[in-house]
Image (cartoon, rainbow over all chains, first blue to last red; front, side):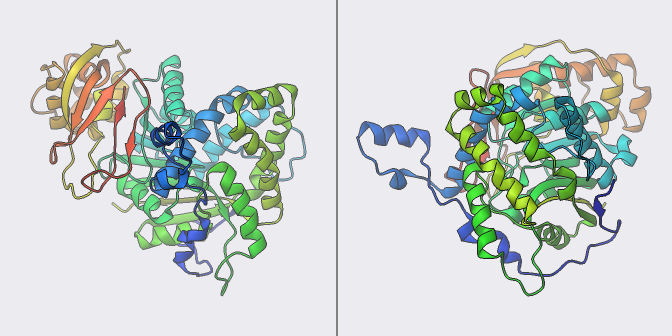
Length: 347
Length: 135
Protein backbone atom coordinates (compact mmCIF):
# COMPACT_ATOMS: atom_id res chain seq x y z
CA UNK A 1 0.00 0.00 0.00
CA UNK A 2 1.46 3.26 -1.05
CA UNK A 3 -0.78 5.63 0.86
CA UNK A 4 1.13 8.34 2.61
CA UNK A 5 1.02 7.33 6.23
CA UNK A 6 1.65 9.72 9.03
CA UNK A 7 4.06 8.50 11.76
CA UNK A 8 2.01 6.27 14.05
CA UNK A 9 1.37 6.74 17.74
CA UNK A 10 2.23 10.40 17.77
CA UNK A 11 0.45 13.65 17.40
CA UNK A 12 0.77 15.00 13.94
CA UNK A 13 2.39 18.40 13.71
CA UNK A 14 0.55 20.28 10.99
CA UNK A 15 0.49 23.82 9.72
CA UNK A 16 -1.47 25.83 12.21
CA UNK A 17 -4.37 27.97 11.18
CA UNK A 18 -7.47 29.36 12.75
CA UNK A 19 -10.05 26.82 13.82
CA UNK A 20 -12.64 29.43 12.98
CA UNK A 21 -12.22 28.45 9.34
CA UNK A 22 -14.45 25.52 10.21
CA UNK A 23 -17.54 27.58 10.55
CA UNK A 24 -17.37 30.28 7.97
CA UNK A 25 -20.96 31.41 7.38
CA UNK A 26 -20.34 31.71 3.67
CA UNK A 27 -20.00 27.95 3.55
CA UNK A 28 -23.51 27.30 4.79
CA UNK A 29 -26.22 26.47 2.30
CA UNK A 30 -27.57 29.58 0.65
CA UNK A 31 -31.05 28.29 -0.06
CA UNK A 32 -33.47 28.05 2.81
CA UNK A 33 -35.88 25.23 2.28
CA UNK A 34 -39.12 25.09 4.23
CA UNK A 35 -40.35 21.95 5.92
CA UNK A 36 -42.91 20.10 3.83
CA UNK A 37 -45.73 20.80 6.29
CA UNK A 38 -45.20 24.51 5.96
CA UNK A 39 -44.95 24.14 2.21
CA UNK A 40 -48.48 22.73 2.09
CA UNK A 41 -49.83 25.59 4.14
CA UNK A 42 -48.29 28.26 1.97
CA UNK A 43 -49.38 26.45 -1.19
CA UNK A 44 -53.03 26.39 -0.14
CA UNK A 45 -52.89 30.05 0.66
CA UNK A 46 -51.43 30.63 -2.75
CA UNK A 47 -48.51 32.38 -1.16
CA UNK A 48 -44.97 31.95 -2.32
CA UNK A 49 -43.34 33.40 0.75
CA UNK A 50 -41.11 30.36 0.89
CA UNK A 51 -38.16 31.96 2.64
CA UNK A 52 -40.44 33.41 5.28
CA UNK A 53 -41.88 29.96 5.98
CA UNK A 54 -38.46 28.39 6.40
CA UNK A 55 -37.38 27.31 9.81
CA UNK A 56 -33.79 27.27 10.92
CA UNK A 57 -31.07 26.60 8.36
CA UNK A 58 -29.96 23.58 10.41
CA UNK A 59 -33.37 22.01 10.00
CA UNK A 60 -33.36 22.93 6.32
CA UNK A 61 -30.03 21.21 5.87
CA UNK A 62 -31.18 18.06 7.68
CA UNK A 63 -34.27 17.91 5.51
CA UNK A 64 -32.23 18.51 2.39
CA UNK A 65 -29.88 15.69 3.29
CA UNK A 66 -32.77 13.37 4.15
CA UNK A 67 -34.55 14.12 0.90
CA UNK A 68 -31.38 13.75 -1.14
CA UNK A 69 -30.73 10.29 0.23
CA UNK A 70 -34.40 9.33 0.18
CA UNK A 71 -34.31 9.98 -3.54
CA UNK A 72 -30.89 8.66 -4.51
CA UNK A 73 -30.27 5.64 -2.25
CA UNK A 74 -32.33 3.21 -4.27
CA UNK A 75 -30.58 4.20 -7.46
CA UNK A 76 -27.15 3.88 -5.86
CA UNK A 77 -27.93 0.46 -4.42
CA UNK A 78 -29.24 -0.79 -7.76
CA UNK A 79 -25.99 0.06 -9.54
CA UNK A 80 -23.34 -0.10 -6.82
CA UNK A 81 -24.73 -2.21 -3.98
CA UNK A 82 -25.02 -1.53 -0.30
CA UNK A 83 -21.76 0.33 0.36
CA UNK A 84 -22.16 4.03 -0.22
CA UNK A 85 -18.53 5.00 0.00
CA UNK A 86 -15.34 5.18 -2.08
CA UNK A 87 -13.40 2.08 -2.94
CA UNK A 88 -9.77 1.74 -1.85
CA UNK A 89 -7.44 1.04 -4.76
CA UNK A 90 -3.73 0.59 -5.23
CA UNK A 91 -2.43 3.86 -6.65
CA UNK A 92 -1.25 3.62 -10.25
CA UNK A 93 -3.60 0.75 -10.90
CA UNK A 94 -4.56 1.44 -14.47
CA UNK A 95 -6.59 -1.71 -14.96
CA UNK A 96 -10.22 -0.90 -15.51
CA UNK A 97 -12.09 -2.83 -12.86
CA UNK A 98 -15.28 -4.78 -13.22
CA UNK A 99 -18.29 -4.06 -11.05
CA UNK A 100 -17.21 -6.75 -8.62
CA UNK A 101 -13.72 -5.23 -8.57
CA UNK A 102 -15.17 -1.96 -7.36
CA UNK A 103 -17.32 -3.66 -4.79
CA UNK A 104 -14.23 -5.45 -3.47
CA UNK A 105 -12.51 -2.08 -3.32
CA UNK A 106 -15.33 -0.78 -1.13
CA UNK A 107 -14.85 -3.69 1.27
CA UNK A 108 -11.14 -3.02 1.20
CA UNK A 109 -11.84 0.57 2.24
CA UNK A 110 -13.49 -0.74 5.41
CA UNK A 111 -10.64 -3.15 6.12
CA UNK A 112 -7.91 -0.58 5.47
CA UNK A 113 -9.66 1.91 7.74
CA UNK A 114 -9.93 -0.61 10.57
CA UNK A 115 -6.29 -1.55 10.10
CA UNK A 116 -5.12 2.08 10.04
CA UNK A 117 -6.94 2.73 13.31
CA UNK A 118 -5.32 -0.27 14.94
CA UNK A 119 -8.68 -1.93 15.50
CA UNK A 120 -7.90 -5.24 13.82
CA UNK A 121 -5.43 -6.18 16.54
CA UNK A 122 -8.04 -5.54 19.22
CA UNK A 123 -10.96 -7.43 17.75
CA UNK A 124 -12.09 -9.02 21.00
CA UNK A 125 -12.63 -5.62 22.56
CA UNK A 126 -15.14 -4.52 19.95
CA UNK A 127 -18.54 -5.30 21.43
CA UNK A 128 -20.60 -2.29 20.49
CA UNK A 129 -20.30 -0.12 17.42
CA UNK A 130 -22.08 2.98 16.17
CA UNK A 131 -22.16 3.82 12.47
CA UNK A 132 -22.69 7.57 12.20
CA UNK A 133 -24.23 8.38 8.83
CA UNK A 134 -24.82 4.72 8.05
CA UNK A 135 -26.39 4.90 4.59
CA UNK A 136 -28.17 1.64 3.93
CA UNK A 137 -25.99 -0.08 6.48
CA UNK A 138 -23.26 -1.75 4.45
CA UNK A 139 -20.49 -0.91 6.92
CA UNK A 140 -22.63 -1.76 9.95
CA UNK A 141 -23.54 -5.21 8.71
CA UNK A 142 -19.99 -5.91 7.63
CA UNK A 143 -18.43 -4.78 10.92
CA UNK A 144 -21.05 -6.48 13.11
CA UNK A 145 -20.43 -9.75 11.28
CA UNK A 146 -16.68 -9.36 11.40
CA UNK A 147 -16.46 -8.73 15.15
CA UNK A 148 -19.57 -10.52 16.35
CA UNK A 149 -20.49 -7.16 17.77
CA UNK A 150 -23.67 -5.20 18.19
CA UNK A 151 -23.98 -2.27 15.83
CA UNK A 152 -26.42 0.58 15.56
CA UNK A 153 -26.47 2.87 12.57
CA UNK A 154 -27.96 6.33 12.37
CA UNK A 155 -29.02 8.32 9.33
CA UNK A 156 -31.21 11.30 8.60
CA UNK A 157 -33.01 9.45 5.82
CA UNK A 158 -36.02 7.33 6.72
CA UNK A 159 -35.79 5.55 3.38
CA UNK A 160 -32.24 4.52 4.20
CA UNK A 161 -33.11 3.43 7.76
CA UNK A 162 -35.91 1.22 6.54
CA UNK A 163 -33.84 -0.28 3.74
CA UNK A 164 -30.94 -0.88 6.13
CA UNK A 165 -33.21 -2.69 8.60
CA UNK A 166 -34.77 -4.76 5.80
CA UNK A 167 -31.33 -5.81 4.55
CA UNK A 168 -30.28 -6.73 8.10
CA UNK A 169 -33.38 -8.88 8.45
CA UNK A 170 -32.75 -10.52 5.07
CA UNK A 171 -29.21 -11.37 6.18
CA UNK A 172 -30.39 -12.67 9.59
CA UNK A 173 -28.50 -9.91 11.34
CA UNK A 174 -31.42 -8.11 12.98
CA UNK A 175 -30.41 -9.23 16.43
CA UNK A 176 -27.02 -7.59 16.04
CA UNK A 177 -27.61 -4.63 13.79
CA UNK A 178 -30.33 -2.01 13.80
CA UNK A 179 -30.84 1.37 12.25
CA UNK A 180 -32.60 4.51 13.37
CA UNK A 181 -33.24 7.99 12.07
CA UNK A 182 -31.25 10.32 14.30
CA UNK A 183 -29.07 13.39 14.13
CA UNK A 184 -25.29 12.86 14.29
CA UNK A 185 -24.97 16.24 15.98
CA UNK A 186 -27.29 15.14 18.75
CA UNK A 187 -26.91 11.40 19.16
CA UNK A 188 -29.57 9.74 21.31
CA UNK A 189 -27.08 7.58 23.14
CA UNK A 190 -25.64 7.32 26.61
CA UNK A 191 -22.12 8.65 27.10
CA UNK A 192 -19.20 6.35 26.52
CA UNK A 193 -20.94 3.19 25.32
CA UNK A 194 -19.32 2.44 21.98
CA UNK A 195 -16.01 0.61 21.53
CA UNK A 196 -15.86 1.73 17.94
CA UNK A 197 -17.31 4.95 16.56
CA UNK A 198 -17.42 4.80 12.78
CA UNK A 199 -18.01 7.72 10.44
CA UNK A 200 -17.49 6.69 6.85
CA UNK A 201 -18.01 9.60 4.51
CA UNK A 202 -20.61 11.37 6.58
CA UNK A 203 -18.48 14.15 8.07
CA UNK A 204 -18.93 16.12 4.85
CA UNK A 205 -22.58 16.72 5.76
CA UNK A 206 -21.99 18.15 9.21
CA UNK A 207 -22.48 21.90 9.38
CA UNK A 208 -20.70 22.19 12.71
CA UNK A 209 -17.54 20.08 12.71
CA UNK A 210 -16.73 20.92 16.33
CA UNK A 211 -20.13 19.71 17.53
CA UNK A 212 -19.88 16.65 15.32
CA UNK A 213 -16.51 15.64 16.77
CA UNK A 214 -17.67 16.39 20.32
CA UNK A 215 -20.60 14.01 19.88
CA UNK A 216 -18.38 11.30 18.42
CA UNK A 217 -16.08 11.64 21.41
CA UNK A 218 -18.92 11.73 23.92
CA UNK A 219 -20.35 8.37 22.89
CA UNK A 220 -16.95 6.65 22.65
CA UNK A 221 -16.14 4.33 25.52
CA UNK A 222 -12.89 4.85 27.43
CA UNK A 223 -10.29 2.99 25.40
CA UNK A 224 -12.59 2.99 22.40
CA UNK A 225 -11.59 4.15 18.93
CA UNK A 226 -12.99 6.71 16.53
CA UNK A 227 -12.58 6.35 12.78
CA UNK A 228 -13.47 9.30 10.54
CA UNK A 229 -13.13 8.86 6.79
CA UNK A 230 -14.20 11.96 4.96
CA UNK A 231 -13.80 14.37 2.06
CA UNK A 232 -11.78 17.38 3.10
CA UNK A 233 -10.20 20.34 1.44
CA UNK A 234 -6.41 20.58 1.35
CA UNK A 235 -4.61 21.68 4.47
CA UNK A 236 -3.94 25.40 4.51
CA UNK A 237 -0.32 26.52 4.51
CA UNK A 238 1.33 28.61 7.15
CA UNK A 239 -0.15 32.08 7.07
CA UNK A 240 -3.00 31.08 4.79
CA UNK A 241 -6.34 32.11 6.21
CA UNK A 242 -8.59 30.40 3.72
CA UNK A 243 -8.73 28.67 0.36
CA UNK A 244 -8.22 30.61 -2.86
CA UNK A 245 -11.44 32.07 -4.31
CA UNK A 246 -11.41 29.67 -7.28
CA UNK A 247 -11.03 26.74 -4.91
CA UNK A 248 -13.87 27.98 -2.74
CA UNK A 249 -16.01 28.46 -5.83
CA UNK A 250 -15.42 24.86 -6.94
CA UNK A 251 -16.37 23.52 -3.52
CA UNK A 252 -19.48 25.73 -3.33
CA UNK A 253 -20.81 24.25 -6.55
CA UNK A 254 -20.34 20.75 -5.17
CA UNK A 255 -21.83 21.70 -1.80
CA UNK A 256 -25.14 22.79 -3.27
CA UNK A 257 -25.86 19.54 -5.05
CA UNK A 258 -24.69 17.12 -2.41
CA UNK A 259 -26.00 19.01 0.61
CA UNK A 260 -22.57 19.64 2.04
CA UNK A 261 -22.63 22.62 4.33
CA UNK A 262 -18.95 23.13 4.94
CA UNK A 263 -15.58 21.76 4.08
CA UNK A 264 -12.69 21.63 6.45
CA UNK A 265 -9.25 20.10 6.26
CA UNK A 266 -7.81 16.94 7.77
CA UNK A 267 -5.72 19.05 10.10
CA UNK A 268 -8.87 20.80 11.36
CA UNK A 269 -10.14 17.42 12.52
CA UNK A 270 -6.81 16.61 14.13
CA UNK A 271 -6.87 19.90 16.02
CA UNK A 272 -10.40 19.26 17.26
CA UNK A 273 -9.42 15.83 18.52
CA UNK A 274 -6.30 17.23 20.15
CA UNK A 275 -8.39 19.86 21.91
CA UNK A 276 -10.59 17.09 23.32
CA UNK A 277 -7.55 15.19 24.64
CA UNK A 278 -7.84 12.17 22.41
CA UNK A 279 -4.71 10.09 22.09
CA UNK A 280 -2.92 8.18 19.37
CA UNK A 281 -4.31 10.60 16.76
CA UNK A 282 -3.35 9.55 13.25
CA UNK A 283 -4.29 10.88 9.85
CA UNK A 284 -3.51 10.14 6.24
CA UNK A 285 -4.26 11.41 2.77
CA UNK A 286 -5.80 8.60 0.75
CA UNK A 287 -6.64 10.72 -2.30
CA UNK A 288 -4.40 8.61 -4.52
CA UNK A 289 -6.11 5.46 -3.28
CA UNK A 290 -9.59 6.61 -4.30
CA UNK A 291 -8.71 8.16 -7.67
CA UNK A 292 -10.41 5.46 -9.82
CA UNK A 293 -13.70 5.85 -7.97
CA UNK A 294 -15.43 8.89 -9.54
CA UNK A 295 -14.53 7.99 -13.10
CA UNK A 296 -16.03 4.55 -12.40
CA UNK A 297 -19.19 6.10 -10.99
CA UNK A 298 -19.52 8.32 -14.04
CA UNK A 299 -19.03 5.34 -16.33
CA UNK A 300 -21.85 3.46 -14.63
CA UNK A 301 -24.06 6.54 -14.83
CA UNK A 302 -23.48 6.71 -18.58
CA UNK A 303 -24.55 3.15 -19.25
CA UNK A 304 -28.03 2.63 -20.61
CA UNK A 305 -29.20 1.22 -17.27
CA UNK A 306 -27.58 4.11 -15.45
CA UNK A 307 -29.20 6.80 -17.56
CA UNK A 308 -32.66 5.26 -17.37
CA UNK A 309 -32.39 4.88 -13.61
CA UNK A 310 -31.18 8.45 -13.23
CA UNK A 311 -34.09 9.82 -15.21
CA UNK A 312 -36.49 7.75 -13.13
CA UNK A 313 -34.91 8.84 -9.90
CA UNK A 314 -35.35 12.54 -10.15
CA UNK A 315 -33.68 15.91 -10.27
CA UNK A 316 -31.51 15.47 -7.23
CA UNK A 317 -29.96 12.35 -8.71
CA UNK A 318 -29.45 14.02 -12.07
CA UNK A 319 -27.87 17.07 -10.50
CA UNK A 320 -25.72 14.76 -8.41
CA UNK A 321 -24.55 12.96 -11.53
CA UNK A 322 -23.74 16.24 -13.26
CA UNK A 323 -21.67 17.34 -10.28
CA UNK A 324 -19.45 14.28 -10.30
CA UNK A 325 -16.93 15.71 -12.80
CA UNK A 326 -16.41 18.55 -10.34
CA UNK A 327 -15.29 15.99 -7.76
CA UNK A 328 -12.71 14.68 -10.23
CA UNK A 329 -11.59 18.23 -10.96
CA UNK A 330 -11.29 18.93 -7.25
CA UNK A 331 -9.13 15.88 -6.67
CA UNK A 332 -6.97 16.52 -9.75
CA UNK A 333 -6.29 20.10 -8.70
CA UNK A 334 -5.44 19.11 -5.15
CA UNK A 335 -8.34 21.03 -3.62
CA UNK A 336 -10.27 17.98 -2.48
CA UNK A 337 -8.61 15.37 -0.36
CA UNK A 338 -9.84 12.02 0.85
CA UNK A 339 -8.75 11.82 4.44
CA UNK A 340 -8.78 9.36 7.31
CA UNK A 341 -8.43 10.49 10.91
CA UNK A 342 -8.41 8.01 13.78
CA UNK A 343 -7.79 8.20 17.49
CA UNK A 344 -8.36 6.52 20.82
CA UNK A 345 -10.16 7.80 23.89
CA UNK A 346 -8.04 7.59 27.02
CA UNK A 347 -9.02 5.07 29.65
CA UNK B 1 -37.47 -1.86 19.06
CA UNK B 2 -35.49 -4.52 20.87
CA UNK B 3 -34.22 -4.06 24.40
CA UNK B 4 -30.65 -4.42 23.16
CA UNK B 5 -31.23 -1.05 21.47
CA UNK B 6 -33.19 0.46 24.37
CA UNK B 7 -30.20 -0.28 26.60
CA UNK B 8 -28.15 2.30 24.69
CA UNK B 9 -30.63 5.12 24.35
CA UNK B 10 -30.70 8.24 26.40
CA UNK B 11 -32.68 11.44 26.28
CA UNK B 12 -30.43 14.30 25.32
CA UNK B 13 -32.70 17.31 25.63
CA UNK B 14 -30.69 20.31 26.78
CA UNK B 15 -30.41 20.57 30.51
CA UNK B 16 -31.21 16.95 31.22
CA UNK B 17 -28.48 15.49 33.40
CA UNK B 18 -29.76 11.97 33.63
CA UNK B 19 -31.75 10.88 30.61
CA UNK B 20 -31.04 7.19 31.08
CA UNK B 21 -32.72 4.81 31.10
CA UNK B 22 -35.81 5.79 29.17
CA UNK B 23 -38.96 4.38 30.76
CA UNK B 24 -41.09 2.23 28.52
CA UNK B 25 -44.82 2.65 28.06
CA UNK B 26 -45.69 -0.47 26.13
CA UNK B 27 -48.88 -0.53 24.10
CA UNK B 28 -48.03 -3.37 21.78
CA UNK B 29 -45.29 -5.91 22.38
CA UNK B 30 -44.59 -8.79 20.06
CA UNK B 31 -42.15 -11.67 20.22
CA UNK B 32 -39.96 -12.57 17.27
CA UNK B 33 -37.86 -15.69 17.51
CA UNK B 34 -34.14 -15.25 17.04
CA UNK B 35 -31.52 -18.00 16.84
CA UNK B 36 -29.88 -18.56 20.19
CA UNK B 37 -26.24 -17.48 20.07
CA UNK B 38 -24.55 -17.85 23.46
CA UNK B 39 -21.19 -16.57 22.20
CA UNK B 40 -22.75 -13.30 21.12
CA UNK B 41 -24.47 -12.92 24.49
CA UNK B 42 -21.25 -13.59 26.38
CA UNK B 43 -19.39 -11.12 24.18
CA UNK B 44 -22.00 -8.42 24.77
CA UNK B 45 -22.69 -9.05 28.42
CA UNK B 46 -20.20 -6.58 29.86
CA UNK B 47 -21.82 -3.68 28.01
CA UNK B 48 -25.33 -4.25 29.30
CA UNK B 49 -26.78 -1.94 31.91
CA UNK B 50 -28.44 -4.67 33.92
CA UNK B 51 -30.94 -2.77 36.05
CA UNK B 52 -32.16 -0.87 33.01
CA UNK B 53 -32.66 -4.13 31.15
CA UNK B 54 -34.55 -5.80 34.00
CA UNK B 55 -36.92 -2.88 34.39
CA UNK B 56 -37.44 -2.49 30.67
CA UNK B 57 -38.20 -6.19 30.29
CA UNK B 58 -40.72 -5.92 33.11
CA UNK B 59 -42.51 -3.06 31.38
CA UNK B 60 -42.74 -5.29 28.33
CA UNK B 61 -44.31 -8.04 30.41
CA UNK B 62 -41.26 -10.23 31.03
CA UNK B 63 -40.21 -10.62 34.65
CA UNK B 64 -37.94 -13.66 34.48
CA UNK B 65 -34.62 -11.86 34.68
CA UNK B 66 -32.90 -11.91 38.08
CA UNK B 67 -32.63 -8.59 39.90
CA UNK B 68 -28.91 -8.97 40.27
CA UNK B 69 -26.83 -9.84 37.27
CA UNK B 70 -24.15 -12.48 37.49
CA UNK B 71 -20.57 -11.29 37.64
CA UNK B 72 -19.05 -10.36 34.33
CA UNK B 73 -16.43 -12.98 35.06
CA UNK B 74 -19.03 -15.60 35.93
CA UNK B 75 -20.88 -15.15 32.65
CA UNK B 76 -18.58 -17.57 30.86
CA UNK B 77 -19.77 -20.39 33.05
CA UNK B 78 -23.35 -19.14 33.34
CA UNK B 79 -25.86 -21.88 32.73
CA UNK B 80 -28.00 -22.08 29.66
CA UNK B 81 -31.20 -21.24 31.52
CA UNK B 82 -29.87 -17.83 32.40
CA UNK B 83 -28.51 -17.20 28.92
CA UNK B 84 -31.82 -18.16 27.35
CA UNK B 85 -33.63 -15.69 29.59
CA UNK B 86 -31.13 -13.02 28.65
CA UNK B 87 -31.51 -13.94 24.98
CA UNK B 88 -35.26 -13.68 25.17
CA UNK B 89 -35.32 -10.33 26.93
CA UNK B 90 -32.58 -8.71 24.89
CA UNK B 91 -33.37 -9.93 21.41
CA UNK B 92 -36.83 -11.47 21.10
CA UNK B 93 -39.11 -8.88 22.68
CA UNK B 94 -40.14 -6.04 20.40
CA UNK B 95 -41.79 -2.81 21.40
CA UNK B 96 -44.03 -2.31 18.38
CA UNK B 97 -46.12 0.53 19.71
CA UNK B 98 -45.83 2.71 22.73
CA UNK B 99 -43.50 5.38 23.98
CA UNK B 100 -40.13 5.96 25.55
CA UNK B 101 -40.24 8.46 28.39
CA UNK B 102 -37.42 10.66 29.62
CA UNK B 103 -36.92 9.84 33.30
CA UNK B 104 -36.12 13.44 34.16
CA UNK B 105 -38.51 15.56 32.10
CA UNK B 106 -41.31 13.11 31.33
CA UNK B 107 -40.96 13.97 27.64
CA UNK B 108 -42.44 11.17 25.52
CA UNK B 109 -40.98 9.75 22.34
CA UNK B 110 -43.52 7.74 20.35
CA UNK B 111 -42.55 4.35 19.05
CA UNK B 112 -44.53 2.94 16.18
CA UNK B 113 -44.31 0.55 13.29
CA UNK B 114 -46.74 2.16 10.91
CA UNK B 115 -44.28 4.55 9.38
CA UNK B 116 -40.53 4.40 9.44
CA UNK B 117 -40.32 8.16 9.27
CA UNK B 118 -39.14 9.58 12.53
CA UNK B 119 -39.48 13.23 13.15
CA UNK B 120 -36.58 15.17 14.50
CA UNK B 121 -37.56 18.26 16.44
CA UNK B 122 -35.15 21.02 15.77
CA UNK B 123 -36.33 23.17 18.61
CA UNK B 124 -38.67 22.12 21.32
CA UNK B 125 -39.95 23.98 24.37
CA UNK B 126 -36.98 22.97 26.45
CA UNK B 127 -34.60 24.25 23.80
CA UNK B 128 -33.03 20.97 22.85
CA UNK B 129 -33.53 18.45 20.13
CA UNK B 130 -34.78 14.94 20.49
CA UNK B 131 -35.54 12.05 18.20
CA UNK B 132 -38.35 9.59 18.01
CA UNK B 133 -37.99 5.92 17.43
CA UNK B 134 -39.03 3.39 14.89
CA UNK B 135 -39.29 -0.34 15.32
